[in-house]
View (spheres, rainbow, N blue to C red):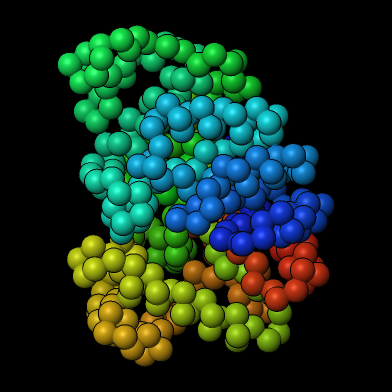
Length: 350
């Protein structure tokens, strides 16, 4: 991973991808280093990343994220190797578990043992990229399939093609303490959401330190990739209010009580009472009240929204907390506005 701060853009959930993708080439021109394509239960990210590989030249392409429950580990490795090939070594594999609502509700498979499965996916992917014959016996995956579970014809195979790289960077989305510790141990990059730099150490410091103590030096320094909404200008209230509603959705509505990672994160930041109130309001249909009940620090502190001086201050806080990649979701309403604001942010980072 580069030592200098990278600037990324998050590209998610657009209906007319081909038309909107032309904007990415303009982002590349003004110095954006990375584009991340989201998936969730939208169009698949892989086909869109392949399209971007054809129309970009220098920027890194990343999935953000591919849920490990929606693909076999071997397919995940093949897909990453294929995207790395068509992009000539510019792909980063972003993975995560997603959540039970999406995995069981949309993919129809059990959401079980996410931490163990992520670890074994990482091990399998790296073995395949090294072109080892795949003979893996883990707690969650056994490859080849044991004879008593199939026809008994499986044998260890290695990927046919020679991957462009035998160590494609892997970033892991993680929020809970155990998941963050694991990401810090085994991943090239870590993808937190709603990253509040002033409280990041309180929420994750112990977990990150535990992972670092177990981390192989071959992996280098962990790339901390903070994804934030971005609007630079004097009249930012509308952008901030739209983001406030989005935070309320996640803290209040993404999961049942006791099963909402984002609500737990807000509590970990020290906002336990406020998080409980937001969830109760949101789940009883009072969404506007839920948004109004959010702590101002949680909204302002997890965004890059405001005047140039305000954005510059928030960038400084991110970098001081250890962030190495700032990946933004541009909120300017026009194409020209998004390009202009990204160019200004690139200048701030430089």
